[in-house]
Amino acid sequence: MSIDWIWANLQQVWTLFVNHIWLTLIPTVLGLIIAIPLGWWAHRWRRGGVVIIGTAGLLYTIPSLALFILLPAVLGTRVLDPLNIIIALTVYTVALLVRVVSDGLSSVPHETVAAAEAMGYRGWQRLFLVEIPVAVPVIIAGLRVAVVSNVSIVTMAALIGIPQLGTLFTQGFQLRLFVPLILGILLCVVLAVIFDQLLIRIGRIATPWRRKDVPA
Image (cartoon, rainbow, N blue to C red):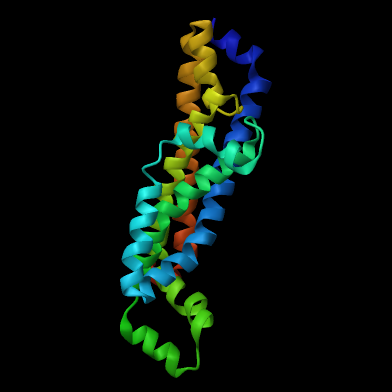
């Protein structure tokens, strides 16, 4: 019976899986792009940094379902518009990554920054060509937490009718079937593991100097 249900709904499950991917991936990327300048500002401006990081932390305390419901009224979008989910998760990603970026930049040795300045690197050039590459391990660690968190939070959007893997949870509840529920959980775990391993791989590629020498 369980296999029959899966085969009968395979196309729908695949569509939900793909929707879940982009609803997770887009906010994570946008959140990182926004968090980098905010984290840099928090790192360079010590007094203001406390305010920036504290405000970001407060944003993460907003219940996701409440934010999903409030955003249409604020943005003038439809309740079922996926844009609401993307913006909400972008806010959560920024809230998580601002401190991570600031901590990552703080981990860059002063000697490295001084050497970059001596070589003529200034401002954003030094940030993107020297500081961020050195801070990659810390930033990747934060991204791993953010993307796994986003995979989980996206499922809440099923309560307002946005199709993704969380839809399998509501279907399982409505039909009183365990198969959609278990399948949804398993696919969320699989997706989280895929994103996590992908970020680990990206981190290794971006920091070749951290690879251990392999004996010939």
